[in-house]
Amino acid sequence: MVESSPLNARDASLGLGTTLCGDFPGPPWPIFIWPLLGRSRFTFRKRSCGVPRWVLVWCGPALVAAFGFLLQNWQLHIATYEYVHVMRQYNLKEKYTPTKGQGIEDIPLTIGLSPQNVSYGSLDDPVTGMLGPYMDVNTSFLDSLALLFPVGFAVLAILTDRPYAWTRVMICFFWLAVGKGFLAWVTVEPASDGWQKCVDRLAANYDADWYAKSRSYCELFAMYPFSRLCADMMYSGHTYTVTIFAFGLFGVTREALRTQTSRYRMAAEFVVSVLAVIQQSIEIYFVLKSRFHYTADVVMAIVLTYLLYTNGAIAILTKRWLKLTKDEITELAKGLTQQSEASDNLNWLFALSTAADGRVNLGCNCGGSEEYLYDAGELQAIMDMIQNKEGLSDSERW
Image 1 (tube, rainbow, N blue to C red):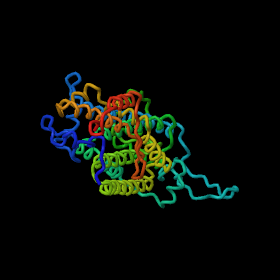
Image 2: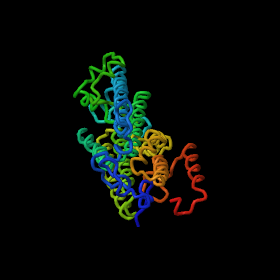
Image 3: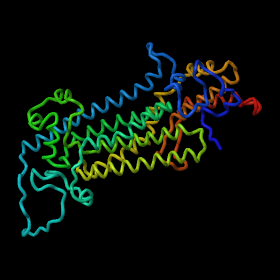
Image 4: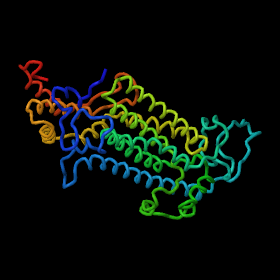
């Protein structure tokens, strides 16, 4: 059985399957859209200051996410600056003082015993200790591993032309990035892999001696944004990046396969979920084994990402960004068909599809995992259309 969606319901009675607008067909849409972003160019064709709205719809959220990344890294440079001064100015103890014989029994800790040891000056992380000895993992490998899902999400979102999923993920990414940067400098945590690893990592661009001098916030803002950092602990950037784009990839898959059989759609969603769990497990394992983050950083990244992705306010922001005006709906209806009855019914189609763009998805392949948000104006419009249909036969209504 083929499941219907707001954009393909009743298309047979409207004759939309063969109706063309320019060179691009109206609903029902195929899974993959060609030419690229063809549906967006068809739906958001109105111009603003000479720029087609579909360009703004796609580029706007991407620029917001990029701006969030820049704000994050600026704040992480501040955290690194503060951490270097803590380690240099206070000259933390440089040797281990045994406590045996003083009524204290030692237990295994993950804290290094000297400045040359891994995790010297860090906080104790019992879960990391359970994973065994430290493993030296190239940070470039972790970066590459974390890019798999962002790239996959971007490619699939563009090929299937899903501006809702795109916008929602980019808004989430902005807030996650800004939040991570803020928490990094508002309370500076010691680097989980220790002072010596920090010094080695900083040597690639701006070394510890550069940070040890007095710097203004403007100087820190002007730094190369991709330079290495220290003490960027709470919460894990690798983990939240993989998690939010994995949710996005799941959402794109669900949206793109709405018109397919439930078995086919659920199988695809299951595959995406399994791949996400496997990739995230590998990434978290190497992050903890290399002491790149504390366990608490990873846990908080997953929890915050999930809560933000399923947040109603994010869904409302996304919906308002993509919402069509009444004039735009009327123009689209005229472009699709000249029949007044079909034009009226298209108001239903686009009204319901707009509401669908206010979905709150729990990010799982389970029953009742989606809810829909309507504002007062949308409810009133739907009630008005119902009233206008009163007195008509079923065939005349639909």
